[in-house]
Amino acid sequence: MVDDRIQISVIMCVRCRETVDNLIFAMDSILYQTYTDFEFIICDDDSDASAKELLSAYCRQDSRIRLLHNDQNRGVAYSLNRCIEVSCGKYIARMDADDISMSNRLQEEYEFLENHPEYSFVGCNAELIALSTAWGIRIMPEHPEHKDFLPYSPYIHPSVMGRRELFIHDGGYKVSGITWRCEDYEFFMRQHSQGYQGYNMQKPLYYYREDQNAYRRRRFRYSLAEMLIRIQGYMRLGLMLKGGIIYCFKPLVIGILPKRFYAAWKRRSQSQAQVSSYMQSMSEKISA
Image 1 (cartoon, rainbow, N blue to C red):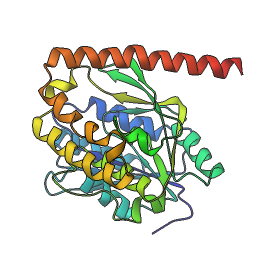
Image 2 (spheres, helix red, strand yellow):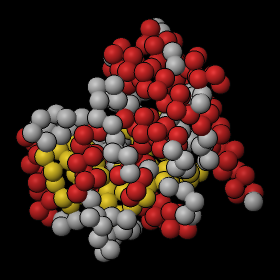
Image 3 (tube, rainbow, N blue to C red):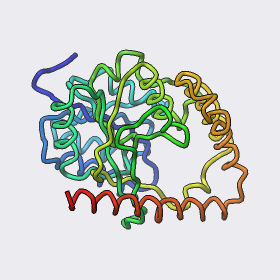
C-alpha cells in the first residue's frame, strides 16, 4: 500500500555470516543519507546470531527500519519480493548488505526520476572496493539499449531506484533455481523487453564491493544458469541473431578459462578501459 508520506522504500536482503562490519557500513550509508523521507525494509535471509542481534538493535534505534525474517535461506529474489510486498514508497531503491551508498545517492536519483517521467528507473556508476580500498571504477552505459545486455547487465543492480509499478507489474523478481545469482540480469532484460527504459547517471554514487579474486568463488552451476538466463532474455529482446548466440556461451567459457587468465583480463578491463572512459567523461564535463 502506497503511503504519501513515504517517497522512497529502500529494500535490502541480508545473509550475513562471520562478520558484521560490512553490514554496519551498508546500513549507516542509508540511514545517514541527505534525503531522509524513506523507509528502510530489510529482509534477514537466515543470517547468523550476531547479525540478527545487530539488525534488531538498529531496528529499535531507528523507526524508519522495517525488519523481516525468512524461516530459512530463500535467496535474494524471494527476499526482495517480500520487501516489495510490504513497501509503501512511490519509488523503490535497491541496496546490498555489503556495499556503501554515497550520502547524496537517494537525493540525486529521486530528483532525476521526479524530473524525467520518461524513465522508469535510474542507476549510476560505481567505485569498486575490496576491504576498505577502492581499486577501480565501473562505468555503465548512460542510455542502455537492448544490445547493451549482450556482454553483461548494463545496470548495477543495488544502485538502482525505480518507480513502484516497475517492481510490481509482472510479479517482481523471478524466484527460480535458474535465476539464483542472476535475478537482476533476468529482471532488467524482462523490463526492457516490455518497454521500460532505464538511465545511468554518469557519476559514481555507489561503492560496489567486488573482490578482485571473486572469480575464484564462482561455481560452474551458476555459469550454466546464467547461460540459460541469457538465452531467455536474448530471445525476448530479439538479440539471438545479433550476436546473442555467441554471448550465450560466455559464462561457460569463463567457467572453464584458467583462473589466472580470467583474473588478468578482468583486472585489465576494470583498471584500464573503465578508468580511461571515466576520466575522458569527466574531462568532457569539466570542459563543457
